[in-house]
Image (spheres, rainbow over the protein chains, first blue to last red):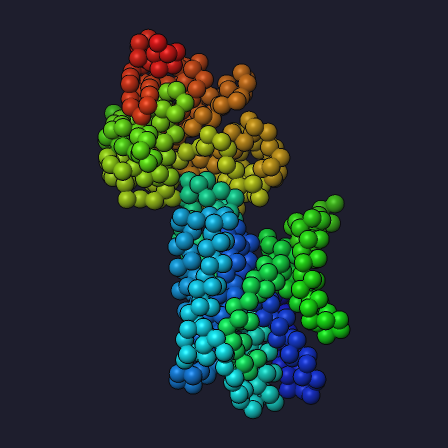
Length: 308
Length: 238
């Protein structure tokens, strides 16, 4: 109940902001923070709960973004259709990635997911319809529904996606599914022998995680009003989206949310005040700091503080 | 007596190595069967084929008269085959009682108070009640072995396969684990015990099967098996 009230308050707050005349930069930065929440939360469903580290985040973001672009170019689909198509396609990709887990575990699974990034990037580069290697310029519609600019509408949409992602992660964590994922993360053989259908749960987690990652990528072309493959399939997305749950804590749904807000706001701050190159350093330094000093992230620190 | 488990000429190869060569055996309901054999003779491979962790290339396995060959491991657990692991595999990020809640939820569909009550009862019967809320990483070796058995019990099995539950334990600890297995057997659970500690397996089993190089070389009562020249040769050499 408290969760939904918080979501409702947040949503009405952001909608109120969006129709007011606050500086546009707030929305430009806000979009990135909200997108980070979706990415970190989505990644954590597979990486945190089940322990399968997916480095292929840019592949899913890119597939989502290019599906949205394709739908836009092909049938001039509305944003909602673009997002649905992106999550459907990426859910299927996630399912196929999940099938890899039958044979690949640990580092081998992670490497296979990295390969996915290059496969998708190559496909896009060789598809003239999607702009090929040169990319494509897009013109954003003047207004977005009741909102004064399209960008502001995108921020509200991204907030809705973040709420959906966090609500799903929260549901998975507390449910039958989450307990099984936790068991298979600790020992897959023992989980099977306790009646846990490990393959089914992994496929479910992979599809869900993939669909959400794809949905987070779908508004990207319109947000940037430009898209090209090299920056879309950038592995830095993977580094940040994995760093966020690690910093926040992977065992609880709130961890990736805290990590995403903290890291992406800090990155935005550094980009604006110091330099856009330095924001990558922030991720590196924080990551090293947390891995060494607080391997269970902020959630772990809080738990330790509470129990002592 | 009714046949609970039937293994019919099961063969398992790893590349060019034949780990199990046409092994056939039958286990009656309520029986206490000991499975012995030197290291590398295929005992654990056989258990893995029965529990579904490995898929055998040929031969059939049936449980309660029905073939379980097409069932994945988790379905076999739900059918009533539980096992403990030679090297304990607890769910390390969970507490002792949470470990038991997994099979209680996934095999028996218990949740909330009913599951907690059932888990506490099992922990009390096995002597781990005091550790219920501790993380598994804090347990001693004998406690980990007991947890393996407790978790297997939580699945309410008809057949319990204990894979070297006593390896590395001292005298009184062995007796403790043996008495747990005896109690389970009295409740009607069929038990297959893999063990290297001869004194334990001989006193516990009604029937003993000896494997060597992937084949059954001898079966019978404990005294018969110990007297068998093939068994003596497998263990002691020529």
